Length: 393
Image (cartoon, rainbow, N blue to C red; front, side):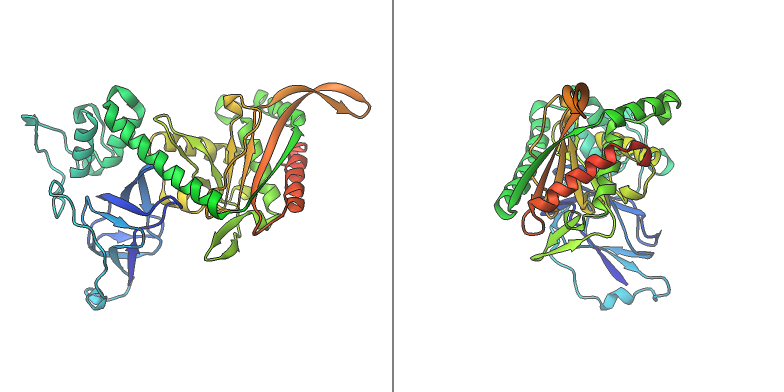
């Protein structure tokens, strides 16, 4: 018997709003199943459950905003008698849902909307569509029996951008995310003793190798430099545990795998950095697939809670924006972030000759409570060595 609680989906999250239950009392759940959709300043996030059993009952109603750690549902483990949860103490606090949210979500059905019968949709999806001015008749549902669910509306909103969102509503959403990011970054600069290092890396060999790979593979299997960089960073971190983990409760906890956060700019404004899990163990084609999938899902408003909460280190690349270098801020509770600027053709000394080479400026921001500049410098040099031997990535 366990209580499924509101997860922490990042250092900037204090509470979340339950917008949709995807599992109902009596449903069987398995570890990794998506059980609910939680809305935070970063958007609608699909939340997984990490134990198996039967969903006994909901503890929080749709529409309620509750703090991180609040019990959301009771899950009865396999083999536990039904009703055993009655011995559990009450779970509090639980915020009262607003009047517009029904205490018990009605079954999906066709209901009157604006004087006509609308398509089959969940109550949460209808509310969001009304708030953001989206016509449900234009959407295709991904829920039971083709019903439109909350995430379908969120995707449509992100795809259409300002054309379907009023100025104040869109500004409010972006402002909320900006406020959350600002709070996390202010905490990081206040609590984390940052130190910064930079290193210019010759990536000509990586680009030449990537060009040969892409020439011999169909478009769907081609690589981008960001995939090579991510793999080089992940492999390098395998030997530098003090940069890969989380600082919690006054102590650093090194991670067994590299869950590499990838900073992704949202089309509607804002930024998130969900993780590619165990990035060092993925082949380059697998990492490229994961990177493409993650970027597409994030920009469509579909990503999972574990992808936000599990990051052990972050990579931010602003090369596509044409900047020379970036001085990033660590995202707590992580202890390091690696940045990359644009690749630029520059004169470079190779042996005794000056030749044109492709150069990328890498930067590292790290936590002085856990590491120092000596080790940080060695980490950047290890990333460089990995990039200069692309065939081994």
